[in-house]
Image 1 (cartoon, one colour):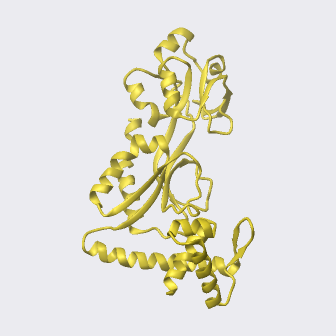
Image 2: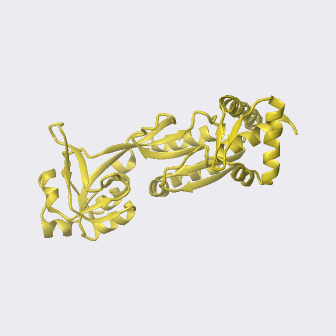
Image 3: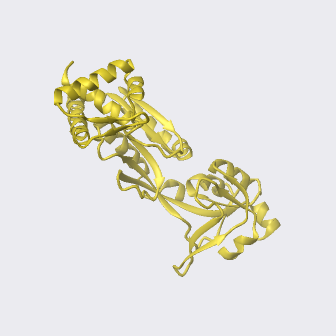
Length: 301
């Protein structure tokens, strides 16, 4: 078997996390993948992977060889892509992880534009809010909304993600309008549950000091869309990103509260692992997303 194929199999085993998963990804028999991995180690004269009953661990030699393999395979892919681009086309597969609501609400248009511009690129989109391992699950890149504490990822900032506190006119007519953050503790509150402490809301006061308020959570949900609908229905005060609620605010269905307070600010990033070479396809998609989202986000205007 040629060395390039052996390298592709080795990289797939590392990124899939097991021979079985790699075999499924490559559409090969598990025995064939295991045999070819053994052949590669025999050819090199070193052990690349330590096999245990539960998982595979790279040796020091295996880690160094993996990084070189990724770079070499990326160069081969780029060489083919360069030839294709010379004839006016990007080609190949691109696997992308996207946040569910933000992806559906605000990334549909630029992705469709990318597909029109590059009809020979095959996109695989995973809309999911779970924290995924890009390398092990074979993703080329992801869009994440976060503070991006994981410094092992290479990131390009796409857009700010600002939060606001809001409620429906009917709720405010019934319960009154809070005059400061402390008064939120006397209101029914709707909270996003996929955070460490849904009932603890952080803010920066008009004088610049940081503060927090413990709110009574009447409803906690993992769906921002559901929380928005509950707020529109008058069920309580909600803290949500502006990309969820801008249309409801524009239509008068929700009223923003305490506008002189600054609520949590995150950002949307395009991220990819440093060990995965950024292909021309991935770079083109990131450029397309960045162009669509550049400047002040339209949902904040």
